[in-house]
Length: 150
Image (cartoon, rainbow, N blue to C red; front, side, top):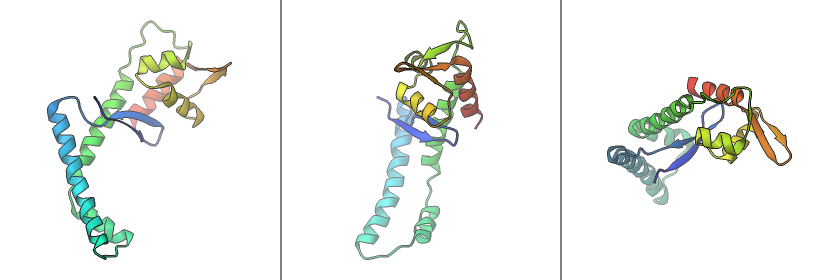
């Protein structure tokens, strides 16, 4: 089972598999998560013991510790998600075709709610006909290209 998260990347939200599917990726993810959690737990314990931190002190404490592995894991998964968007094959679909979100979601491996969120936030052009949202294939491709280039 993949752990899924929605992460804001400046041009919309993309669903991202945070941990990989290989045992090695899972081990890296869990190890990095444990290290990050230990650092936050240490701060929490000091607060419970009466230590008062201001935001700058917490930032300095966190900067002293190595979060590179955790950040790298998340960034790598973001890159994987962006690549997946770019690699979608739409050979037999007319780029001008307006597809219902249910079809588009299956093609791009995203939920209808995710796509509807993009429409509501103005990140993806869509038109509602009755109760169903439609998006032009060309517009979804443009969104995928913007996400992949960031």
